[in-house]
Length: 205
Image (cartoon, rainbow, N blue to C red; front, side, top):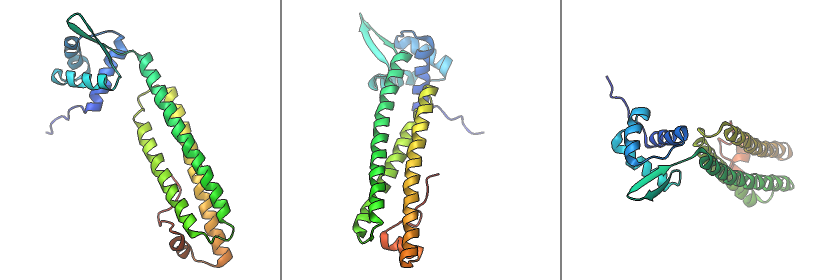
């Protein structure tokens, strides 16, 4: 029989925050060392380490009163922090959308003559960079799945907008390839090779 897998550090952090949010109370370390193992399955030996990591990330507040340290975290502050993070992500997504629009305009300009292959290669390289940025943002957004449902809903809607924008750009690339094939009689693999289009270039699922 396999040994039961312990909690990851992120799972411990999440469960520790649940203690604060559910009780809306102030605790000493010794209190949490008793509560966490019993109610959240966090070993008492790891409570101090988990708590310190949350304090370092400004997710839990602490203050010394007399000879004792007290810890607390209220949902209102956590929500405010998530909203600030969301605003930062929205700004990054907006910037990415503007760059995509600029690239779309470059595609339209490239339809005339199509002599500037260096420009096209640079455009494709920038597109790949934006796709990687989008994937990084998507991964970062995934870490906030446990947040407020309304915030998650907004994030998913923004993610769909970014995905649709990238796919519209991909539409333009395919349209240009079709135009070049009809205009100059190039085969598709010849077009891809000439302009540095990757073999796996396709829509985002």
